[in-house]
Image (cartoon, rainbow, N blue to C red; front, side, top):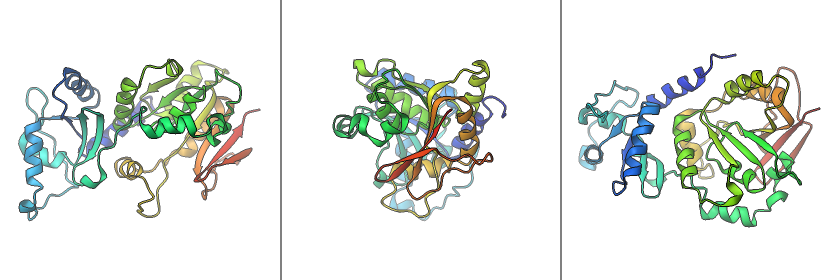
Length: 316
């Protein structure tokens, strides 16, 4: 077992090396500024003043194209007494930004404006439409976790990501604990949960824990002795795409560029199988093989959707 929080700390280091900075565009309210300070203290990501951002945008103008920047070099940032990045280092550190906008916290790639902001929004029209018209408990995901008539089904979503699957599972009646080890994605999820409409069906149904899933399962499993951690443990590992394509969502392209693929999926699945109550569900691309385990265990069944397959491991 890895040292507790070791993977989380390693992930923080990887995220910081990408040059993440925090920007507050929504200056009409106090809350985003306070949230930015808390996020900076939690993650170590520096806050860039808006004036510095404008200087960076100017540096990326056509007249400045002849200047080259070594993107592989990341200097230790110079900060002011308030923790803001000094102007001289802002350009190197502002390619990736966590931006407090009036719409919510956004992940922005400054040199790819065509991508637009990436925001987790549980109130989005797309998610609400899927909740109302996507099939409900007849959806492949709902069938895979075995929701049926259980209104108290507990699920641990080990790879929360953008939170879409957690939202769908909660909307059909499950109580979902979302685990996310990336401080970047965790910040987006936390902001989305703070903005979600307060409706009875979601009271207490979605909980975020910012931690490494394998460490969490093994640590909590040791405390629970032989008791399962949840009825269902759900995994949606990020896998490498073979080529860039418009079919690959910008969110996945951004996350892969920032975080890389999940290389510890087998370790996580093995831990999940030891501590799930009724089943473990793994979301896979339709064309991908099941995750290979040292034990040789294979899924008991699989449920197909249009683009994905849900491998289901039944606990006996």
